[in-house]
Image (cartoon, chains in turn red, blue):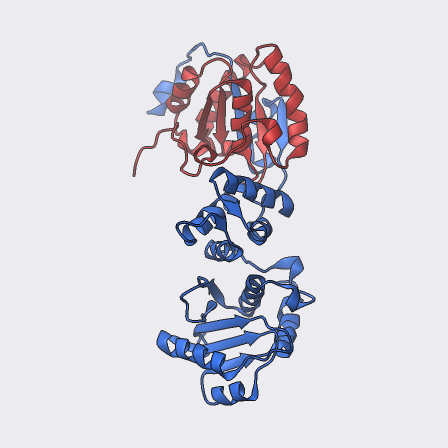
Amino acid sequence: MTDEGPLALPEDSPASDWAPQHLSEIIGQAQAVQRLKPLVELSRGHSEPLSHMLLIGAEGTGKRTLAMVLAWEMGAAFVTTAGPSLQNGTDLMGILTNLAERDVLFIDEIHRLPRVVEELLYPAMETSRSIS
Amino acid sequence: MDKGLNARTMRIPLRPFTLVGAAEKGAEVTPKLRALFPVTVVLQPYSESELSVIAHAFARAKGLSLAPGAAALIGRFSGGSLRKVRSALQLAVRLGDAEMVTVTERDASVALAILGHQVMDGASSVPADLMQLSGTEFEVCVTGLLQRIGFRTELTRATGDGGIDIVAYLDRPIVGGRYLVQCKRFTDATPVGAPMVREFYGAFVADRSAVKGLFITTSSFSAQAREFVQNLPIELIDGVQLKALLAEHMAEPS
């Protein structure tokens, strides 16, 4: 068993392969792109972080890819982890305290966060809430 | 152990960041967490044509081109998933020749079959005219038929297979075992002759582990070909029988 750590990129991450960098390069998902475009422009215009968002979609619909594009569009770092990798509060706090302003933290399978970790996320999300 | 750490109230200043959470179903996420996300975006499954375009884009990024048939197959049979498009393509590239710059339809269908995708399923089950299919599509169609009958199937590589197009396994007592299949898409006017069937039998014998050989064609077999296979574990299936089998097994929903 190896300890990948919460920041390890999965081997099939789109980063190692082809991936769109801009919303306009995304193939399909027209509805989502149409909604997100003005949101990204607004946040960028005000130098604010993008609002938190929940992406719902079956496996392989491009949730991670979309999150990467959003980070790219915001000119921010993309940090990725998954619910099951965050076993305790320290894991999450380690990631959160290292985020720079406007960074995008992607939590895959967020519904699989252990309860204690999820509860730590609540105040963290509220303190950094921006536009709604 | 956790208790001590988490029980303490801590005030740690955080820089304003963006949390992007992902889940397959909204209902899986606790209502409290869901309520903290100002924006929820639902991603839709991709259409076949979108997946084909995506497959083209993946290929282009790797300096490859994709035969139109290959893109269509990947789009159609990768189950609506970006990850599966990517893995099918990666596998197809590895299956192809080293210096290959074009991913062929054949490589794509072999890759999809290896990844366990039912390469012939659902709506487009019975092609109206078998002759409109390409050679590979015809093999894929036969593969679909065998799967419906209950076989596990493997498409073999295009060359060096001694004429074996599909290896099929039936996990059943008595009639089960390894079957070798050759597919020939010929026009009605061109029957399959004895030499082809003899060559297929040669490959069958050389295999040593197969229980039966199936030679399947869209046309018919010559009298000499039929005579040759008498008393051999080779079954010849002509266009008429094939259509009947397709109608019987592919028409009803699985």
